[in-house]
Image (cartoon, rainbow, N blue to C red; front, side, top):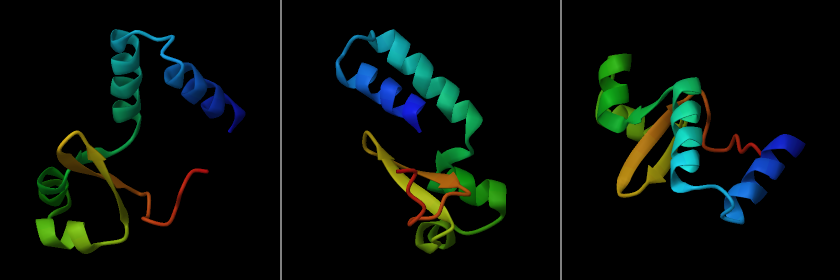
Length: 79
């Protein structure tokens, strides 16, 4: 948990370039199962509404797009 705090502080202080932050985001997206609601519904063989109301997917708004992360519940906060 200490390492994530250090990374977040570095990002917050703006000591990283936009390209470096984008690289961190891309790496993180490759490590977790994240997709749009519709994309996750297709992968899981479920309806978009089923994914949207399920508490088995963490919903995260990135820009104007609502994304879901499989395996993280709505109440399973990392810190």
